[in-house]
Length: 154
Image (tube, rainbow, N blue to C red):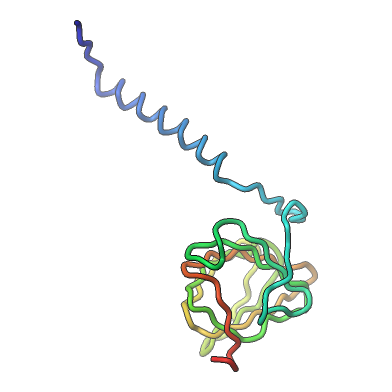
């Protein structure tokens, strides 16, 4: 039996090609197509209590909101406000569309525009208002199960 030797360069090239192909396949399997122009291909549900105000909707992109590590889209209509509330989980957010004014307790109001990233610490009260003429769609990644407490219920 003859053992052939391959060069380190050949081995690294083969490894890189294999990883690239596996990465493309994994991305295709794991990704969910989101039509960012109108989000019509997603199933939206009214926001659960206590954030069940008029014009508030969510859709789950990944995971189970009752468990750790879920990703959702949160949609508000122009002129609506999410009342002051807090979550036991930190939030990692990116505004996909619209313009949103967000106020965290003890901080100045910040305006998010499409593409803006924000981090919301766990248990820090905050409120949000969709300003402008188009709906606000916010991507939120939760570390812990999703819960919402109104500030007056703290």
